[in-house]
Structure formats: structure tokens, C-alpha cells
Length: 201
Image (cartoon, rainbow, N blue to C red; front, side, top):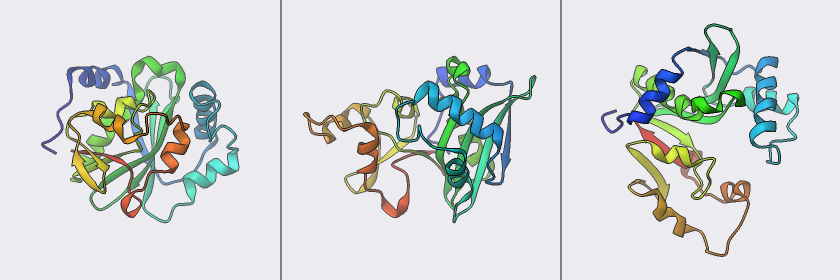
């Protein structure tokens, strides 16, 4: 836990989202979750690999899990509106952020960053040493915010290593390669099914 200290910007993000309440539930899909998921995809990933996911496929993503999984919802305290959701796996050594989505109208609130900050608190409350942030692809602007956290480790060259300079991982890709992000992610080899990027709390 000692390796992470929030930056000034991250502290502002926490204050900006102080009106959200967290509630963790069993992995059960709801209509509100799916509606928010569709709104998020249409605004942020309209041409991505998940764009055609219907309600049954969404329910399968949420509910068909062989391990301990929670759905962490973030609700506006004043309106009661569901604002963000994170599908989260719980391991013996940490929590893994499988997939998160949020109301695109709140994009200026930096909800992606806030969800990570809150998961760091979840891990601390449970005395777990790590938060696995999921995939991080060098050069992806939509994933770039994950590299802004202190105490990061990245799995590269067959081992976990401290990330000191995100730009050095750009060289891992061939300079003429222009594979879509989805294909880059699909080609990443990970140990024991663990995500590519983690945060030590």
C-alpha cells in the first residue's frame, strides 16, 4: 500500500466525484446496467468489438464467472441515477478491474480515473496488496490514463516490473505495425490469466 500516493490531479478527481455512492453487488445483470453500457459504447466505442453485444451477451459477461466476482456500481447520491459500473474479480492478493463503463455525460469528471482510485480504497479496506487495472496498450489514448498512477507494475518480457517510463514500451511494437487495439490486446500473453497492468496499493 505504501507505493501509491495520489497526485494532486487525482485528489481533485476524488473530490469531484464525492457525490457518488459505491455499492457492491453479486454478479447479476440489470436493465439499468445494460442501458448504461449501451450508452457508453455508442459514445466511446461505437465501432469496437463489443458494439454489437446484446442484452443476453451482456448478462453472460456479468454472470457467467467461475471465480469470486462483484459488480461495483456508482450511484449519484442526489438523483439515484446509475453513473458508473465496474465488473471486478476478487483474488487472494487483490482486486482485478475486468471492465468498467460510465455515463458519457460525466466524461469531464474523469470517472475512469475515479473508479481506479476507489478500487484502491476497496483493496485497502480488504487489506489486499494489489489492484489489477486490466489491459494497457502502449499508444492507446483511451487507455493512457492507467499509466498516470504511482507505484505501477507492468507485465512485460515474461515478468512483472516497475513502470518508470510508459514511453519505453512503445518500442515493443513494430514501427510499421498498425493493428487495431482489439487485435493488440488479443495478442498479449499473460501469466495465469492475470491482466496486463497492476497497481500496488
